[in-house]
Amino acid sequence: MSSTQRTPATSALGPVSVVESLAGVLRRHILSGQLADGDLLPKQDELLARYDVGRTTLRQALRILENEGLVTVRRGRVGGAVVHVPEAADAARTIGLVLQSRAVPLDDLGMARRRLEPVCAALCAEREDRATTVVPHLEAALDGAEAESGDPAAFLRGNTRFHEAIVANCGNETMRVLLGSIESLWSAQEPDWTEDSAFAAGHEDRLAAVRGHRAIVRCIAEGDDAGAYYLTSRHLEAAQAYAVKVAGDRPVQILDPVHGHPRI
Image (tube, rainbow, N blue to C red; front, top):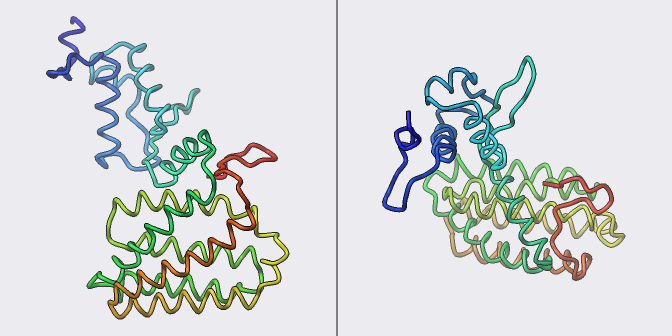
């Protein structure tokens, strides 16, 4: 069979190579939900027969998907291609690499968060089902943060869960992915300032942050989208002013500065 006959993906833009066409078909299977995270692609012989391609073509198509982070190819007796469904953290890592390569300062990332998270808080308040789908998650995160207020690092983790819950439950999937990436990047910077002496000694400040969060939750519970937006914006302005002061002008980083291990 000729390469032209083998290639189903031809358009006005020109022919697509057999390798790219096969990678596109397998990619659609993953992104459409036909394959779940952790599933294995069909065995190599089955794929070869189904798509009538050679082993080299299949290997190259799988390499494309592996470079995209959609599969991990395991070799050996228990080999196979393991599926990875993309998540916000994957987008966060890619965005982080771009920001780090451009030496984007931390406050630039913080500004994006300050502008977008209040929108998510307002969206949470607009949800008709907020009493069951939003408020319980926020209150659970707050209860955990308050209980851990004596431990700066544990409190910070609880605080992060609260902000992530606002984004995760806003009801807009695009905002969840975009701002979820920003939240992941921001939280990856936080270990740099958890050992700051002022932060460690600021138990009352941490309790004040919890009270501020509870005020945001009240607005959301009452359906006050304007109030939720305003309080979230004001809270982030204050919290990030402290973070940027501690971190200085250091650019966004996604690699551990000591060991080189990815934080995201």
